[in-house]
Image (cartoon, rainbow, N blue to C red; front, side, top):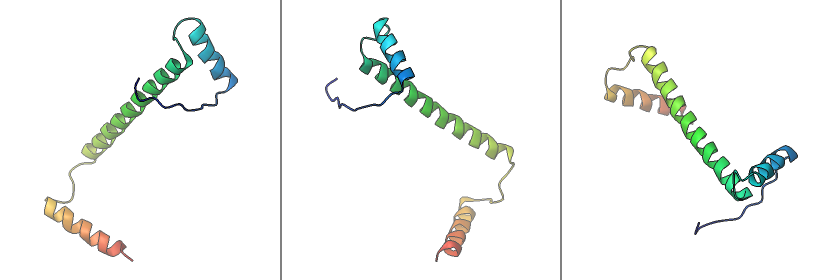
Length: 88
């Protein structure tokens, strides 16, 4: 790891015990490795949640039926009208 930065992390006693146990049992070689693995899983979960949210929104849109605007030009015109109405 050529570009590593150190940070300080405060953990509850429960999390600290879990971290120490993971290292002591050989599951991980260091506390840093435990934290890096946890962050990788967190990042993966966030990415997955974002994808799932987009799928849900897409499905909601499809299920809501056809839109009321027939062309992109009509959509742009409506957007401009709303923007002008909202402007102070």
